[in-house]
Image (cartoon, rainbow, N blue to C red; front, side, top):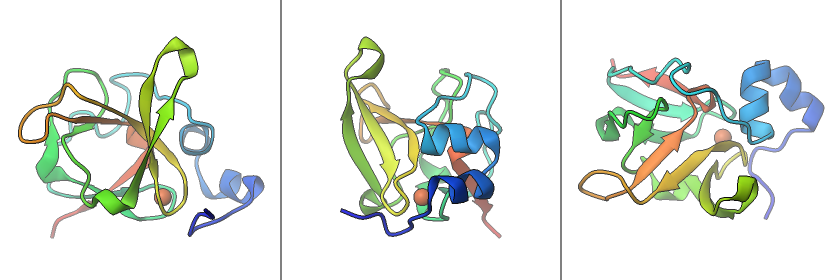
Length: 132
Ligand code: FE
């Protein structure tokens, strides 16, 4: 299925910062405790840094201690896609933005209530749209 937002590799390279490009388009991972949203508790909507899709609400953000922003559920389940990821000798579930196909992070089953899920997301995949 084609992504709703589709750019060539060169267009993505120009639209994103080098770090965002590495994570969103090349499935990279930012180093823990370095991302700009790790400790942020501001209210608002976290949008995709690639396409602006609404991905996570600050209301579901929690302190995971992992060094990456963590959420117990997406703002809208239909805006993210899950994929089995067998890279790096592990079996994980990758989370991507449905609209642009950008890599966001992974989801694990060791999260808090009410869902028990932990969406472990790279800061640089996100852009916080502050509540006004
Ligand atoms: Fe996106």
